[in-house]
Length: 466
Image 1 (spheres, rainbow, N blue to C red):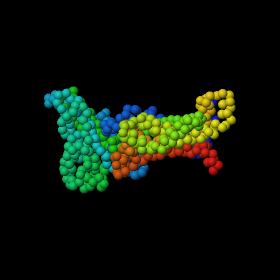
Image 2 (cartoon, rainbow, N blue to C red):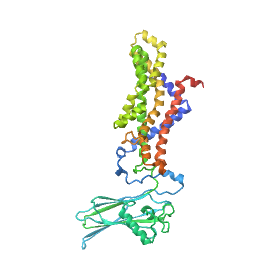
Image 3 (tube, rainbow, N blue to C red):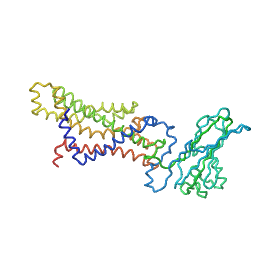
């Protein structure tokens, strides 16, 4: 099939313009990100975007790792000790009927700032009696801290949030009292356990980090030889991944990357469908004229006068929308618009050209002329409007999501910004939570705007003369 001349001229207009080439390069980057998301990010990760348990092992609201180059500090990365990384010792004493299980691991903490949180998980399998669990930490200065000592209640996974658990906090207070530390301030385990023993030990802003080897020791006392146990210990850092995390511990990189195909699919689908339909109605209006022209133009006038954004907000409030239903509603509300008027005007000019009169003279039907002669001539204008309308629809979805009216199940750039404002990101200075999705929205819109500018010079001959 031969490419219409109009399409070839449109491609030449884009590639011969610096703005068009720049826009294409940016668009290729966004498309590359989209393919990366679809190929390398499992769909089950995206489906669990709103499942807090899935993300609980990530640090909470921390900056991306490349922020190290900004603050010039050796911020701690997350130290995740997996069950297979522990040195495990177990033996059963038949005389006493007790099975001893010991899990030990040494970690080197050599960072300039304190961890954000501490977390441990113990997975046990016991038959008759519940085991006794003892969790200890031995600091580089030789001080031993008893974090937890109690009977486990669950057969299976037992999680301990060391930074917030009240029983563990009380044990940390006992440790500080034994050191003779005056507890006038609130003691945070993630600070005082890693701080140099001095008068500033409890002050996050003044305390010094005690660098060196920390030993994690978990002891389990069970009553049956078949009882087993494994442990997991996490020292959450102050930085994480390429995009940081949010208040629900979600890896924002996954949300940002997955937001690219969603934004492109939504923007392109809405722009392509509405541009072609509006142009088709405009061509019908001018080609058939009379009553058809009158009806199409009056519907277009009414459609353009309706408050589109307000109507969309009202529908989103009254009905629960998904990204698909939102797209359908947007297309339905924009079946008639400005492109209809433009296509009608251009079609009037095309009607007077000689090849149209020749087609009429050899008996071509009106529908044949419409689809084979008029619509191909409208393609450059349709393509230009598609490119120019894509940013509008991307911003539209983002705006609705920021207002809390988007699809809550899909990680989109607008939804990430909405969550950032809900989590008081501007108040606490979580800049990555807002700036990264906003940058991607602007970058994508800029790509289409640059391409649209190069096409605008082709569609508007007056711009060529300037």
